[in-house]
Image 1 (cartoon, rainbow, N blue to C red):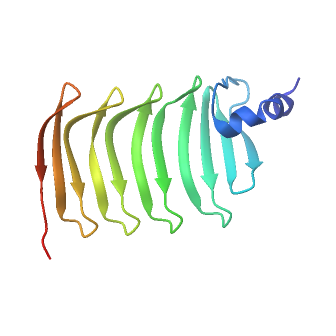
Image 2: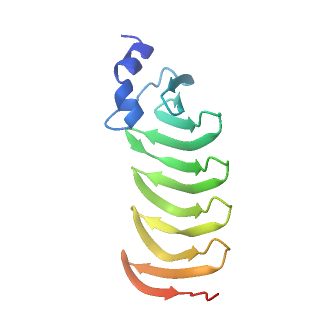
Image 3: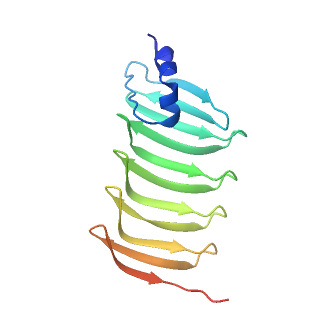
Length: 154
């Protein structure tokens, strides 16, 4: 079975990104474009790494994620249909790791903070759509230690 036949036989698994392994060290820059009803997913195999870019029908990138050995690994980005960044962070072995930022569709940061082994850690700040602080949460040992709410009155 050649490369494209092996991908085609596992297409449903690829589209749902569940329980598949991609190990093609002899095909360092092979590209595959998969068109579904609502969007286009472009998969690029780089040695043992799979990068998936998802595009809207209009061609605007809406998601970029990397997989290594059947798990999300590396930088993750997502965008709103208007092109504004919606999420930025990183995965290690399919767990969120490090600094993550989430935006409103107007470009204002909605919340940001750090993950360790897939769990919130340290200070997380949530903001209103106008950019003012709404809440601060502090996590220690995966438990909320402190919450500060910032109320705004009209």
